[in-house]
Length: 443
Ligand SMILES: Cc1ncc(COP(=O)(O)O)c(C=O)c1O
Image (cartoon, rainbow, N blue to C red; front, side, top):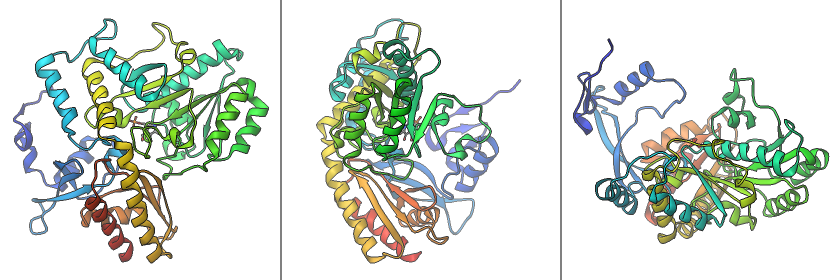
C-alpha cells in the first residue's frame, strides 16, 4: 500500500526522509523531471526559496565550489507571477486580513449552497471597482474567459435570438485566454493545441487591432455572433497595444450588431496598465469582463466575471458553479486585494513607474538600435522586442538577467516582458533597467 511520511516545516520539511533544505538546484530539477509533468521548462539553475520584500525574491543557485550545494542571492522580480502579484509579495494589508480571518473570524470554507457573510463584501467590492451590475466568482484565471464564453452563448440564444446551436464567438488572433479546452479552441497557437483536438466549434478569429476585419465579419455573420472576446492589450502575445481608436470603433460595431464586448482583463486588470482596468485606457465599457491573477492579491487564486444585468442574468441555479468560487477565504482575499488597489493607488503608481521603465528601455534602444526593435507597454505591462536574429534570443536574455539579479521571462522567441509588482520603487526600476542594458550590451 503506497504511503508517505511528512514532517517539519520550511527547510526542515521532509518527505520520506528527503529534507527540502538539503536539495541543490540540480536535485530539485531532477525531482521535477522524474516526478512532474513536463508542461513547463523553468529557468535553469534557480530555485526560489522565499521573498525578502514586495519585489525581491531569494533564489538558490548552484554553489560554484560544490555542485550539490547552493548559495542564496537576491533577485528583483520583474514578472510578479505574470501580474498575479500587482499588490507586491506578502502585501501586509492582505496578509493581516487572511490571518485575522483564519484566527479570529474563523470561517475558511463553506459551499455556495449556504450563504456566508463575506460574499456580500466581495460582491459590493467587485461591482464597485468594475462599475458592473453583477459578479460571478470563480477560481483560476482561465475560468473567467471560460465562463464569459458560456454566458455569451446562452445570451446569444436567449436574448439575441440566435438559432440554437449556431452561436459564434469571435476572438482575436494571437490571443491567450488560458489552457482549458475552450481557451485553446480560441487560440491560434499550434503548440497549445497539438493533439488535444477535437476543438470547440462556433469560433471565428480576426486579426487583433484590425477593425475593418471585424466589421467585415460582423456584416457577414453578425446575426449569429454572440460576442467578441478580446484582451484589451495582448499580454502573452508580447504586450501588443492596439491603436487608440481601435476599441472605441470595436465598441460601436458591437453595439450596432448587438454583439457582446467581452474583455479578458485577467492580466491587464487591477492597475497593471495605469488604469484599474485596461479598457478604461480606451474609454470604452465592455458588457462582460473577466478578472483573475491580481484579483487574489498574490495570495490565493481568485477570479470573477463581471457584467451587465441583462447578460449575467442568463445564468440560472444549477447551470453554473464552482466549489471554491467565492468561498469565504477567497471572498476576504478578493475584497482586500481591491482595497489595496484603491488605497495604495496602484494604477497611478503603475503609470509613473511604467513611464520610468519604458523611458529607460527606450534609452537602451537608442544606444543599441541594431539590437532592440521596439519597446512597448502601458503602465507596468511592458516588453522589449529584439530583432529576430539567433544571438538575440529572449531565453539568453532571461538567463543573463538572472546573473544580473533580475527575473524576467521571454515570451515567444525575441520578446522579453517586464511586469513587476506595482509597488516597485524607482531605484528597483533603475536596477532592473541597468541589468537589461548590461545583458543587451553583452549579446
Ligand atoms: C489574458 C489571460 N486570460 C486568462 C489567463 C489564464 O489565467 P490562469 O493561468 O490563472 O488560468 C491568462 C494567463 O496568463 C491571461 O493572460
